Length: 313
Image (cartoon, rainbow, N blue to C red):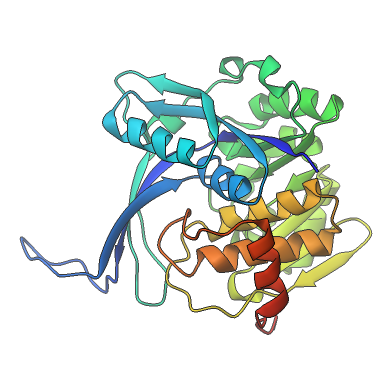
């Protein structure tokens, strides 16, 4: 089944260093096992895994007119991703992060937002959605709900499946900022902390239902080692994560989004889509970076069928 996805939003160049237990003081130096870099962000990172899973992908947003931007776009092109919709900003650096990866796979981040800030809906040509089956907006809070709705609502009205995820930590102020866009989102893909922070809900399911009441069609929430919770007005589905040796959790949320959306595009049930999302996240978690792993759809499905799962609670 052909699925043509446009991912719009954050494009980030990540540098990962592992393992890091402390930052050396002064001019000190520490030997590490690995330093790696790759494409990341809620648009670029999601685009990579979607492409691996067999979707046709175009990505849109902005990077700087700098060597980092050149490298980021070339790395995306290696996966067959069409980057012709990505703008080049003069005088602004490409968004980038340095991620010291702890031995348990968690990581703090040093981040420059760079060219991701200031992207306007008018810079996204409506004609680029011709033939698209799906529009995924990564980070609607970067432009605000009114601007995000001006992109999502016409797409949804034209029969394009819409989705969004978030970059910002959960906060009621962020919810108010993005609220105008929520009725135009078929699938919202936040993490657990974001849902609870956005809604101030006592439970995750309660928070998801609060987002549904604001117009979202379906909320698929990532919960780390406890997998995912998919909530619609009719049902709540708990899907476990896979038991894998975790090297780096960077990009696991974007990988889940890509796997879930690919499953939706293939006509799979919501549970099956979430299983594919968890499989993609589990494969990415076993190495450094959002683009870790040379898997495709068949390999992800085999992984899901053969790999033990973790207990949900």
